[in-house]
Length: 236
Image (cartoon, helix red, strand yellow):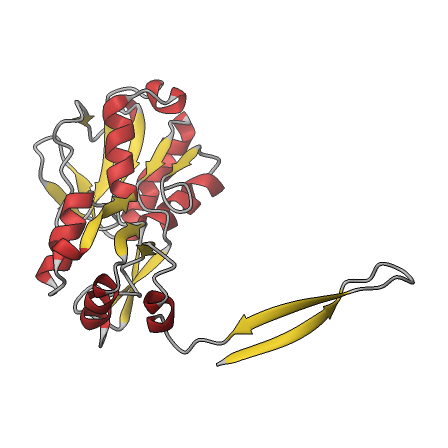
């Protein structure tokens, strides 16, 4: 549906009118069919799927977008790496060949910790307290040259990928509730060690429930006076 309107541009006695053509759209099909927009940035949680299954029509919609020539990239605050994100979408029934790739907070965190070419990251040490996932699957730190420690006095910084567990030096994860993790943060705040948050979201959708995300711990640490490096949109 098309519509037109006029806007008074002001301008004193001379006055003026600006004519604007507006289009009202009832979906993304009309945008796709114009072929005007070549690149499409898509969020995933709460947009394509609920963490457990695709939203009705999402898989078909992406196929139709691709048929219209759309080049799609997933951009997400997920603390997991890009390849894991694409694999997850595949498991949920999405065709991975439809995506040019993914940009995730977790991928950026991994790259910044690996390269150490950013001034802030270059100052971090190698020993970290690692807060991660348990039921959702712990996140590997392989290739980063980091040493996971249990003691606050041994840590150079805190790395937060998840809110379900504390990473152990053995590579395993010890389940912990959010209150226990926050107690560890209170100890860390006394030493003023910095924190890296690999997902700035406070909560995310998972089926019909909301799950606490790393941003909640980041917010807690800032309130305790700690320094937090937030990785995620819109910085991606």
